[in-house]
Image (cartoon, rainbow, N blue to C red; front, side):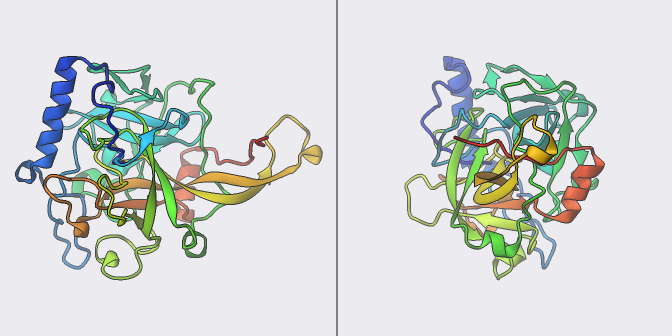
Length: 337
């Protein structure tokens, strides 16, 4: 869902006239609210679906951002929906075999999933350097595909059949960092990364943006009506930019990073008694892109840019789920010169 609306339409996925036209048509469909369904968000008081936000589907990306070739651990995930349509989400590599994404991205046809860590995720209608997954997606909430997203549970794992290429370093999930209220509140902006729709209608290119924190915990009203306190957060750019920084459709499942000072043993081959502790500033994965924030009322000609809801992963219940599925935590840091 990351709305990195960069001017990349002509170069994104091959650049042919037919592909550019198809992307433009997809962007126009998103901008027309009469053709959009209800959002994944629900009013937590009534349980009723929130108004359509026009951000679901294939045509969606990080807006107001920039290209991100260095974010190699962020993956594009392509799959076929239950309606037979091809769709795209984003994800983050946690170890050498597991990709964490949004739960609603795990509702496609099991054997249709492909994962790529290429900067340009598609070549025409094909996924670039595609990796297959082992079995189907593993949902944090097994009922997600039946009842829709329950706030705070929008997570899924993909297990790759083969280990990732050696040049892709996993981001890891940091056992040494829990995204507690005290740790999150001082952070003013966070980095979002994804392959979703940009402000120019492009898609399937990895983008990033620094998005301001609106609420780190969804505790106060009206935020607590639409997202789960202490299990979700909202990022939204309220600075009056022409292209506000945001996530968008296709960015679902992409990572949110907070810059933190962390300490851990240095990665290497030294015996334990000789390993030194590294203390340095790191991008720590703290959340996964879930859905648009419905109360921010995106306009029909600007379907993204009004704010998004993100699932916080720094919770013991989620770490226990990852551990049950044999995801290896990040236990060391690579020292930077």
